[in-house]
Image (cartoon, rainbow, N blue to C red):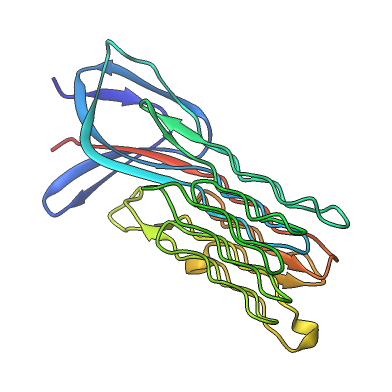
Length: 264
C-alpha cells in the first residue's frame, strides 16, 4: 500500500525518472504514518561543536546515511525524530573550551554530536568529527563512518575542526587551520547540499598570520580579537575559534534529519 505520512517539512521532486517525497526535520518532531509502508532513505546530521576562545575550532556533527535499509509503517508509528543542537561557543576569559554538539536520533540510528574545540593544553574534544586543538596540542578524534579528526594547533594558532569529508587542517606558526571539508547529500529538492563542514581555527593575524576558514564555506571562520563565526544553520557544521583570548568562539550549527522515499 502506498505510504501516507506526516511530519516535518514535506517536499516532492523528480530525479532521473523517480519521484521522491522528503520529510525534512530542522528541529525535533514526529513522523506519523497513517497508511501503508515504505523502505526509506535517511540522512541524519548531528549538531556541530562550538569553537573555543583562544583555542581550537569546533568539529562537525556526525553524518549517517543509508538507502532502503529501514521500513517505516503504521505498526511502529509514530517515530520520534531528534535533531541535535549546535554546541554553544566558548565565551569565558581564559577559555574553558567550546561545547559539544548534541546527537541526532531517528529510526533507531544515532549520529554523534561534533566535538568542541580545545583550550589551554587540552586536546580538541572527540565527536562525530573532532574539535581542533589549541596551541601546540592535538585535535580530537572523529567517529568512524561519521566524520574525521580535528587538526593540531600551531605555536600561535588554533587547529581546524574535522568535517565529514576531510580532517581539520593543522595550524602553523601564526596561521589558523582550515576546517575539514563537508560532504554532499540529498536535500529537499533534486539539488545536493553540503553538510558538516569543520570550523576554522583562529590565527595570529596581529602578527601577520591568517585565520582558518570554515570547511566548504559552511563551517564558521576563525578570528583574531573578535567573535569567530558560527556554523551555517541546519548543516551540522562546527563553529570557528578565536585567537588571543578576546571575543569568543563561534557556535556550532544545528543538525538536520531527512527521510525520503519513492512515490512514483
